Length: 99
Length: 89
Image (cartoon, rainbow over all chains, first blue to last red; front, top):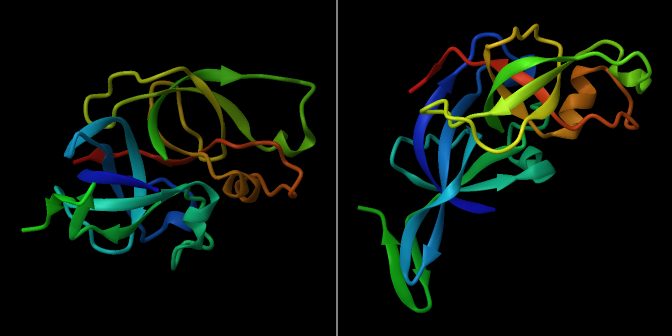
């Protein structure tokens, strides 16, 4: 699973029927370096059923586990937002706190 | 999943039987916001009719690829085009 920031949405009319009515967000993977949360290298498109908005920090699960998330059983997804992050602590220090 | 631009297609006469119903497209992964290319090209199965130069969404869910190709569990395809991108915002 990765920590990522939601940076946008994707709209696709022609798609696999398993994605009908499912929201897709663009997320930018983040890493924690020296107690700071900084943007990483990868950008991923993920399904979102939790209502993540632009700027939100989320947890994204990838691979075949993504289908285990509620409502994803018949979706050919490989990435799903599974949590909206409130707070991150690392090495005993706060790294992120949601406003 | 990632966004990509369709660069072309691959034709193969001798191939795994599960790939008979699909086209194999050459896709270049791109940054979804700037469309700048990222990494190396990949081959993805397509049943949606994606054309060359179209912007697509690619999933690496192998089981999803099997279902799209109506293949059994021995289908070796991993990447499939699952959507044609209209808009990124």
